[in-house]
Amino acid sequence: MSEMSAEQIEELKKRRRKRSIALGIVLGALAILFYAVTIVKIGPAIFQRPL
Image (cartoon, rainbow, N blue to C red; front, side, top):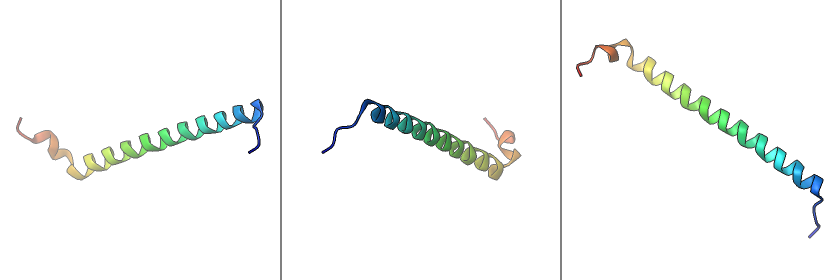
């Protein structure tokens, strides 16, 4: 098994961090999309419900 240099390790860490950030953004956008679709499907009647 070959040893990795410090530069290669740092490059892998940078790639992994960018991938994690991108995944977090995508998951957040998906959650917002589901929330918006739910509100649209329920419609404005949700504000007329009894408490």
